[in-house]
Image 1 (tube, rainbow, N blue to C red):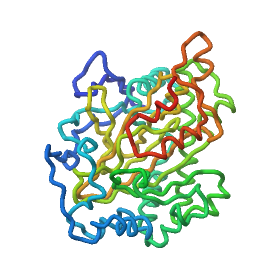
Image 2 (image 1 turned 60 degrees about the horizontal axis):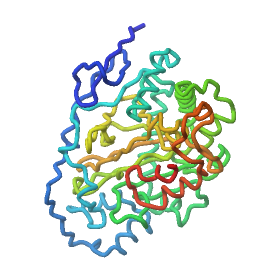
Image 3 (image 1 turned 45 degrees about the vertical axis):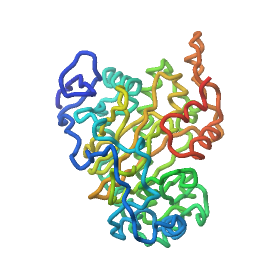
Image 4 (image 1 turned 90 degrees about the vertical axis):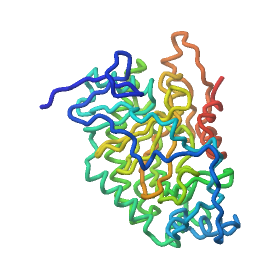
Length: 405
């Protein structure tokens, strides 16, 4: 058995510090510099490209991308030399190279001995200070992770007319949704991403409604991840002195789950757009599988600094969502994050969003406010919170204001 090593890694450098975040690992490499392909310069006076093709007309683009089901993958495969104007983000929404912390890193935590007090403390510390961490040596087999990545590619290889059967206009259920961008009807500029969203109700519904090309792989990924999710929530609740996670508490924390298959095709002008705009998740926890490309950034604590979350083979990225920030009365925090576009490679990711049920009321847990701790969030119906999030474009962490007292 290898020996547990404890290091303290500063979020702005790899120098050893005394007041930094705890990192537990056995034999994992230290974070590497951000890949050069992701450090695309953002000029102070960018020139918006002109596009002589058919998509100067927004209605033609909407018809091709959304109505016909081609998505941005279809745009990318046309071999466009310039970005359609509908995807050009305002300057303030683009990633600026000077704001990236090249050696910054979130904690990497070994879950092989997750009940160990030091490991548990590192999880709670990461959730409270960072809102993000990566886990390794968890209970989700590598082959399950590889299978879901293959299934994601297989879905997006389907013809547009097949994928379009699962679009908002044609899907037989709101629990299965193929789409593009985030909320196109509310966005001033579109995001460079396609997705398939699968809300889990039952295995029977999944068997009947989910695409066969990815159904079994998603179900297996969710089932195997559930073990890790329960371990993390047990640790995080103990960190709040909530020592018993009974059936009612478990239902509140993880009563519903949704998995997204995300596809980010290569982009002709990645510096002018975004894969996903600035936002925090509305979940309790999000469990994210990345591929090897990279492109996820979280906001640091220093002004407008952004920290890359480097892919580690076999790892899962964990982040706190707004629901857990509310229920922990701000002790655990959801953190703004974003995804950049890539000019040379296609990228995929597969998040599981672990949520309360839509009918649940969320508020600071009673165990936290029983001893005169002042609540900083009001009670809100979770379905109302979700509607507030999805009715507008990504706007950083503004959604949390919906629940503030």
